[in-house]
Length: 426
Image 1: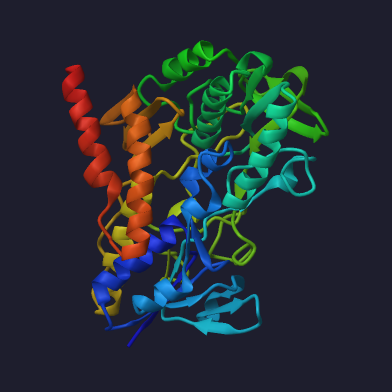
Image 2: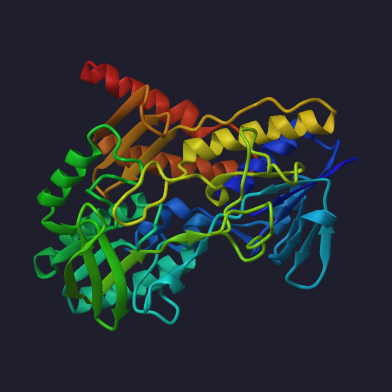
């Protein structure tokens, strides 16, 4: 009997352990290792930050649930991975040995790379974790009591821009509901070379869609922006030209500020030779497998993916839900092959499909494949995207509670996008 361990209990890790359970049943020992005892549905964090959801709405306790489905669970978190020994050293000093390991940790949030960034010891908010979104909501309530300028955006080398746009537009929608939007000037600050780049060099007309949305909502923006420092109530950044040379220094005041940080690999894998790149992301081959340690696989945000192309201020490539689903399915198949002594042969579909909710509408985009030139390069705006994002939340939380494995993006989003394209005559 093989022991298969999944390291990380977020969207990628939960999806992976359930697909492995479906594949192997009780044939092999399955172990899930998280850094807490609960699952958080991260895509709903922008809603938590404006009070549309609470932590209780989007979190699920894991120990009893995993026991129900015959999956061993550890919530202590991993101190260090020792791949040469096939061993995880946990934060409580104990260890777990494995025959096969899937790393699905997500990223470490690199707040330290910009002075004054982050909710703990800094002056900006975050929606990357549900606890951070709770803190952001408390700060949002202060903004409501005493309206003033808002700055939203992303730090240099950020790779996940969608949530920043979502939060800006969701915040705009909520401020309008409270009839105080006229008292809150908003500015979007991003390292992207243009609005709607998204780390993907745009998808369809995301540039035009996002610029139109910004203008309609009276949100100013600065691109090619390199945030250098945040102090209490002030953010400083350098705007560069198309060659990356300094063009203009900016300083903006704020009462509320949410900046997405750059990502790195988690401490437990950082610096493991042959396993990670210099920023700690897991190196994989075309089969989701690490070339050096071939019993280690990786899925999700922790995977090393090169940028789509050079930009004046560094940006990374996002890993969307559809891509993660595809990684999980390929990894499950390939581990089954390895366990049975067969050659691994399944590759993930590196396509980008994303739903970006704007509170009262939204934008969906499809990039097949993610890196240009593409076979499909399409984006569309409408209220249907907002409704689809709500459906995704309900579906995934149900999936976690019931150990379902059906892929949401493949079966639902692409059908909706296909129907929308047919309606538009595309």
